[in-house]
Amino acid sequence: MTSVIKYMSLLTTFSVFAALISIVWQAFLSLKQLNKVTTILTGLLALESSFKKPPQPYKVAVGYGACTDLLVHATEFLNYSEKVINAIGPEFTVNEVDNMNELLQTFAYYFQNGAAAERIMPNKKLFRELIQTAKLRHRDSIQWFLGGNAPLMSTRFHIEGADVLLGARMSHKLRRLVPAEIKIAGDQIAEDDIHLILEYKAGDTWGPIKTPRANRYILHSDRNNPHMNSVEHFDKVLHSFRPRLLVISGLQMMDSYKFEPYVRERRLEKIQQQINSQAFATLIHFEMASYVEIKLLFLLRQYVMPYVDSIGMNEQELENLRQTLTYGRTTLATDWNPRVASTLDQMRSVFKNLAESYYKNATKLPRRRLLSRIHVHTLAYQALLTVRDSKWKRTKLAAAKAALTAHRHVCQTDMINPEAASLILDESFATSAEDKLNGSRIKLNPQQPVPCWNETIAVFDQKAVPIEICVSPVLVCRIAKKTAGAGDNISAAALSQQL
Ligand SMILES: *[C@@H]1O[C@H](CO)[C@@H](O)[C@H](O)[C@H]1NC(C)=O
Ligand SMILES: *[C@@H]1O[C@H](CO)[C@@H](O)[C@H](O)[C@H]1NC(C)=O
Ligand SMILES: *[C@@H]1O[C@H](CO)[C@@H](O)[C@H](O)[C@H]1NC(C)=O
Ligand SMILES: *[C@@H]1O[C@H](CO)[C@@H](O)[C@H](O)[C@H]1NC(C)=O
Ligand SMILES: *[C@@H]1O[C@H](CO)[C@@H](O)[C@H](O)[C@H]1NC(C)=O
Image (cartoon, rainbow, N blue to C red; front, side, top):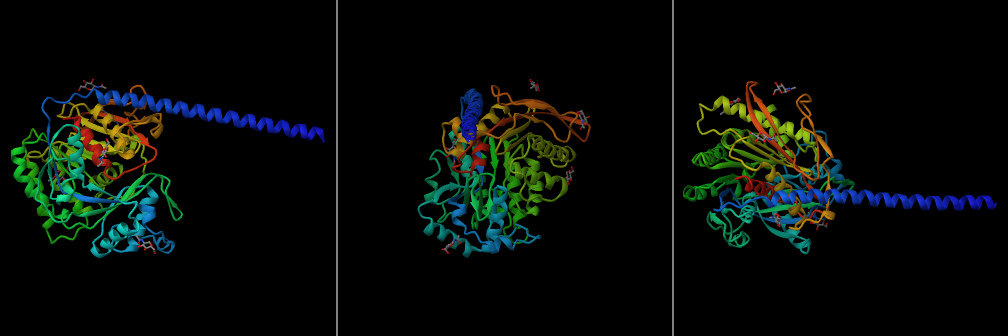
């Protein structure tokens, strides 16, 4: 008997001891991780502070459109319905969102993948009802913000010291949310379009579904924005403004909208003319967004992409663009945390495709530009590809700035606390998954957190275009406050460092 008790107490002592070791070990590991995050943060901040503001502020013009963002918490707002979700059949597509069931089903799809989505709801009555529900039932938790890619990017350029011209029509109420120094080309309208932003945090659950990351689902039913009416207003002022950089954004508002035949083509033609009436010294950036309609993507390929110097997008938009360019089709949600190697391969593929069509058609279309910059922002890292000795400077600094902005935006803070950040990027990454021969492995050095290297991309297997690639780890915000508008903030922050 006594020996059993002795044995038991020995066992207890032992398990207490084991638990203690485990706690100490865990503490040691998290301290090590915290140390690493702090070192990376220090490195990124050092790069950021190496930026010297130009003596004369750069002029940046940003089109098109504006809206009011109404932010609600997705899983509290949408009532989960087992019946509706279980009715999702094998031929389920996520194109149309015109009734409550379609909204719940598409939301479930993207939420489960943690993928950002933006959808039009042609049913204006239902959309108004949803806005009313948000206003009445969620009065205490909803938030109103200035929205639209162009105003958000403009605000970021302004914060970075640029002289900004924004092409948008907006109400007096919304105008007050745009910094007063930003010039606006566009008349005043009575009512702004509203975008309903359904935000969620990593690990949120909706019925039995759990999301892997923080993101949002955007729903809109715009009257003004799809018609791009600000293009003409913008035109008048743009000519005398003579920007260093012209940003084209907000074109996804034309997605899935029921236009009269050829109206959309004519609007895009107008935008193409606007781009092509710029001096060659003006850099042109196109900010991609979430597109569903393949036809619109083809139109963008025809009217916009051949004439820009730079494009910016997230991992899903990259995959979508690559599929459109190479296979003439699109994908739905993709991996929420793609490997660096596959992102870089897709960037090379997009670059090669656009560069080949540039060299093929350059003589026929004299206003064409060779794409010289691709910026892809993902949750875990920022990847930038620039053509060497092009007009884009300081690629490394831009990658660091993008990474810092990502954390600051999502955590809604200017001071980054290492304890509020986590590192998702692996200790090392391959530079290519497809090209094992020429690819290499890069080990992330916390002291020098932004690796950059040179490559050449073979175009038509004869012409070699020299490029530089930089990848910066993102210190991911642990408790997301806001994901909507992050891409705009990040893209503009990076561009502002490269002029
Ligand atoms: C959720 O359910 C409540 C109670 O039935 C209802 O009042 C509300 O409108 C519903 N919300 C949505 C977004 O349909
Ligand atoms: C340019 O070249 C590509 C092939 O690289 C071709 O598919 C395309 O139709 C050509 N024309 C234009 C306007 O891009
Ligand atoms: C952009 O990021 C900054 C932090 O750098 C943040 O303060 C600001 O609120 C963000 N802009 C928007 C529109 O959320
Ligand atoms: C590696 O690079 C060389 C020269 O740039 C190129 O000719 C070759 O095709 C590349 N290898 C692969 C597997 O793509
Ligand atoms: C990349 O090439 C440029 C010349 O175009 C050179 O100045 C730079 O040092 C190279 N960078 C690396 C990392 O080798």
